[in-house]
Image (cartoon, rainbow, N blue to C red; front, side, top):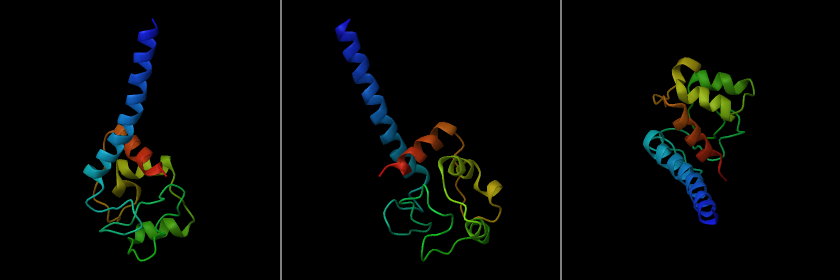
Length: 118
């Protein structure tokens, strides 16, 4: 019984770690060709500190009119809003420059968890 509990604990701990790694891997697959998680902009704006940040607010990045309009209202990125955006960027903000969507909810959740990390 004790061994089973220890094994269960180890498996649970490794599952949490796998989710973080998975989020990073998914970020690399879906996002990293345009975005950075450092302060530097790429083809897309830096995603460092994205959660809680005002939409279209990274200095020096040329946002689409659609995202500038959203940012002008004071809208901020949170997990729900980012999930909606990642599922279909052009549906949420017609005219956005972001071409990539992430169709699977679990993949979006993992990417968002990765972006939330300090």
